[in-house]
Length: 162
Image (tube, rainbow, N blue to C red; front, side, top):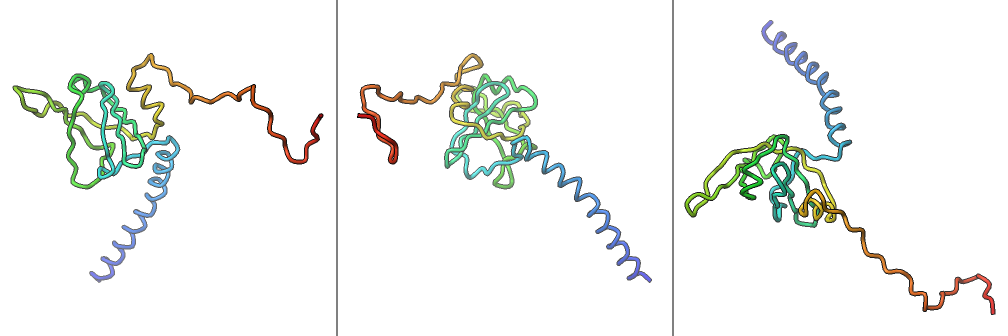
């Protein structure tokens, strides 16, 4: 009788977990739709740049840049412009915290800790505008205008006037 109750308990546990799976899958879809990523690989972080009390840029190897907007402002972060993080795995996630490093007597000390938000991929132009401040405009790419002095290149099959 004990074996039968253990087996039934296992079956009911599996069924209850499978009922939760669709809700979890919907959460994953929502995260994908907003363009944000929950985690980044710490082994791929090349450099970081503190923009302000609520924004950090993570420059990754390979050229990808992620903007992380902290859910709550971290004023010491804006002042000190440096932080550390500790993780037991090689991923930094939106549930992790960064600890502001403060300059105390010629050395660095741990300051306040602040929670991270999701990681959103941005362009180099967007990163440059963020670093320059809120009044900065994103410069469009320079496009060389056609030189009016150069003759037009004939299109094969088109009639040419003479």
